[in-house]
Length: 148
Image (tube, rainbow, N blue to C red; front, side):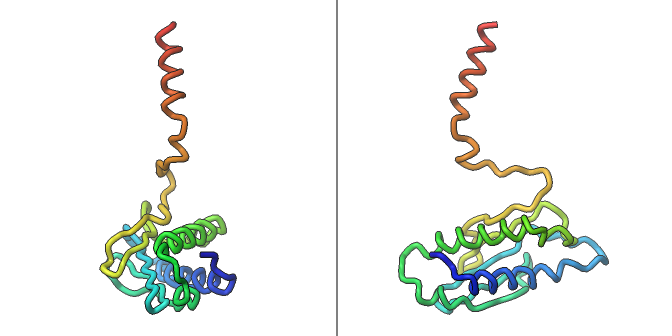
C-alpha cells in the first residue's frame, strides 16, 4: 500500500500532535512505548501512551478501501518509514522523554504487533540485514586467529 501525500501528512501531523504532550520542560516523562493502533474497519489511526491515554487520532480514508489481506504488514511498513523520516527531520529531538522508548504498532487488544522505531542514543537493533554474512566473517576471523 502506497499512501498518498495527503494521508502521509495526516499521519505525520497526528504523530507530532501526540508527541507535543512531551515537550513540557517541567520534568522528564518516563514512557516505554508510544502505541500506534491502525484500524482498517473504521479507517482510523489512534495513538496512545503507556497508560492507554489517547494522544491523537486521525482518519485515513485509504485504509477503508484497501482490499488485500496484508493490511497489517503494509501499514507497518508505511508507519516505520514515516517515523524514520520524522526522526531524521529532528521531530523527536526536543522531547522530554527518558530514553529508550519505542513506537510500536498494536492490534485491537493493544497487544504489540511490531516495533516500528526505537528511540535511544546508544542502542542498535539487530536485524537480518545487519547479521547477513556474519557467520562467514567470524569463521574467517577464527581461522586467521588459529593460524597465528
